[in-house]
Image (cartoon, rainbow, N blue to C red; front, side, top):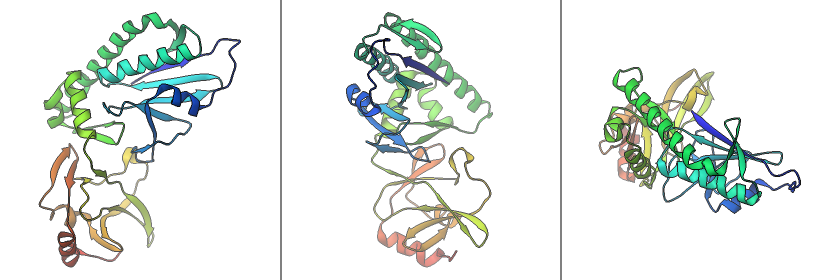
Length: 276
């Protein structure tokens, strides 16, 4: 679920502004998603994410459509990000010297923003209630949402932390995404006519890894085997690795955080290394 706002300049205000100029005017942090929905900070593309680095949530998508600025807010999200969305609309309306914009195909006035903030807070609460219900009923084992920095797997443990309380949801997104960790994602290779997925991690780097390997949004299917590369050219079968790491800490419903030193990696390589 998302909310889309379009800010159109006045008929006589037809100076074309670049996406770089618009983003600079907002004074917000920005970046783009890679193919695994991890944030690449300080890069700009056709679709760029704006966010408050002090309160990381899900990000506000900004793009240009000819002269128009288009903003998109994903729901459910946090109260702070909802306010940020409408503050950014207000700011860009001021820039373009307009008092109206298009929200969900309807022309609205910036004076109505407080009403829309309430709408989106209510929509976010309903969204969390729906996720909570489906997880509690085992309709979903877990639910993936895209945080600003990386995807997050929500399961029963997460639901028990915030249920449908948006303030607790905000605290959760902030605490999870403020960790100084490397979020590992797989590379897929064709080896001897079969697809293999390989996660790479290094020594002494806190790394978020999945308990069950997967490709986000099933963008690639038919992977036959999964591995970890722990040293240059040194690969270990996924199950041998994940079943023999003793210091894993919980991250989310499908991920743990591990930190291995060189001795631990050498030991894993000695016991489980295979050639692929």
